[in-house]
Length: 386
Ligand code: FAD
Image (tube, rainbow, N blue to C red; front, top):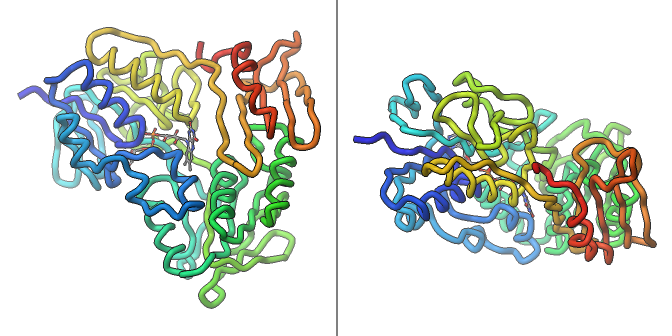
């Protein structure tokens, strides 16, 4: 029997690839193995569900069973692949050894926590990075039976989106982070301050420039201690301190990896024959974009490659749309440090243009009414991976 084409991971990358592959090849045996529930859901919706109190089932388009049926694939859920043998072309799950014909790693990225969470508060400290996490956090909010006081640790894209969404759902939100202003890796400081002001105006507290020092139980609450000696009290803590590509499996199989992900060329081929990677775990020709458009483009290109038409992936100048309705933000961060940021606009309607030494546009960030300039600016900005 032919060993199946095997995909590890059922996020938007793994499922997106399976979908593309089935359009091109109806007969090849395909297996998808995933550590989570395998439900087909859109991860960006996770940070929009609390405003509307959406139960987790409303975020999933299809169950793993329906995916397996529709795409005629073997789907194994709640199954963690523990090791890959790149020479023997097998993988290990507990006592099982399974053969693969070609292997695709779509293992995504995991929340990075720069601090330990004490056992005494572990059941009140969450990160939401997949539907199972959403289920757990949603259940904790519902169990309170009243609006919660939530401390959000981290003011990057994920922290800001959850903060805005929770506040819109009637919860009291306090944010903590060492950086001076929100979205530090996406927008220059004045635009981050504009978002911070919009948050404060909506009643959120923003402890910018402060590091988390302690997490302690305080009856049924959590006391969040800050580095200046002050503290805040929360029912629940949501940690959003960044994501790290899940490279351990690839690394122990001897594949080339770094902090940026599993290294691939533009055909998504890793350093090991027969193994490809895409999505948040993949660093494609030096770029790990970690958002949806690049992984969809990768899934399309890789499906063609795996069905006999070698295809290189390209990424366009695709800006990130930050889902903070209190102040809409769009950003195309420059690939390298700009020579200068030119900032125009008034109040919270700001345009920031990142320029190189010759004054050429290499990225941009927009807030408020200026987000409508995204199409016009994206037309002249350089592609992420040309
Ligand atoms: P993941 O979704 O992380 O999937 C990884 C899969 O691998 C999972 O199924 C996991 O169970 C499995 N896995 C890992 N290790 C193993 C193992 N050893 N064995 C078996 N299975 C394993 N992007 C946008 O473009 N727009 C947005 O608005 C946006 N909003 C976002 C909001 C939030 C809250 C978050 C967290 C991200 C957002 N993103 C957004 C980013 C985007 O969602 C991700 O880039 C994308 O979903 C990543 O998909 P993935 O399949 O690569 O990884």
